[in-house]
Image (cartoon, rainbow, N blue to C red; front, side, top):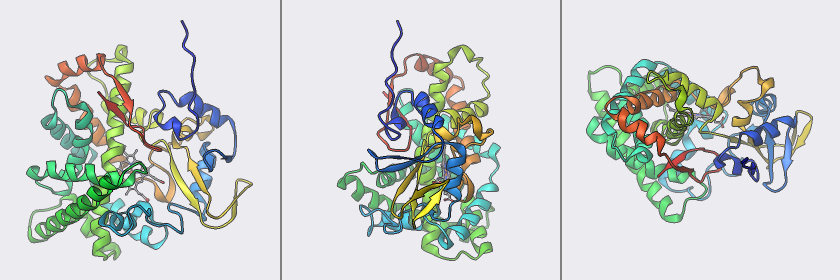
Length: 377
Ligand code: HEM
């Protein structure tokens, strides 16, 4: 019996569709930007189109009129959001980005993978894949930043509450909790900075960020604290999605399992072919033309990264971690965390429960317009 393929209704529905990839291949068959009138969004799916938008000076990471989403503006979560390099162009982007990039580049991928494997093993509970895939990477990041082991559960819990403010689907109660969590996280980092400056101990990642910030002359203390929170929030959901999608890749291809998988290669392939961040957006600041198409000030362009990753014309270029000036500075760390967590999952004695678990997995995808994160039941 053949089952028929019901494609996603549109590019946002694709993010959490069981198999969006034939649909994305259809998008790639159309060259250039096209306007989806139902969504009210321009769609860029081809590798060259995505690059053209990312490079265009009129294409910004936030709408000019709404640098912080109205739902969170005014509270602590909004103050964090407004300072993130991810959410700024120009001056508030370049200098902090350089500092973060340099600090993150100094972390050894091997050390990050080992840290994640160790923390992943410690946090593993037999029934807990759904929560564990969030807790393990964010706890690893918090540990590299310098938080003591005893503080990792609180940091992970605050982060779970904070990221709700980034979803357009959150309700008022979740946003209230996100503001409180943002305050707690900012206070936690403030304390950690005090401890780090009082200590003679060398180099946590936090100390590296502070040193690189000094070196580039970035001396806004609130923005620095906000971007430290940002390092955790940007680890939290996307890396959980990378782990979850890697678990699914293993479950789909049990015949390829030897017990000695190259987890790093698996994670890399998943980050390209079943990526956790399927799209991102750019907001047009002034009327302009992109690839011969006129776009208007105030319009939004959806960059379908998960389609561009598969573009045969893309010459192997990858977009799952962005590209160009806003490219993700955490790519190597994210892959190391995911590989470490996967290694922990596959290690004995958890390995026995893991193979039983892979046989009986059931999941849906968490509701999201951009992140593909399985929810295991
Ligand atoms: C699997 C995990 C991750 C994925 C899929 C991912 C993906 C991305 C993507 C697609 C962008 C570009 C967004 C755009 O251009 O609109 C981005 C930016 C960014 N990511 Fe990641 N990321 C991940 C993990 C991390 C981690 C672990 C960190 C921190 C250590 C991090 C820090 C950042 C930062 C700071 C930016 C903003 C860069 C800028 O605007 O210049 N990410 N990420």
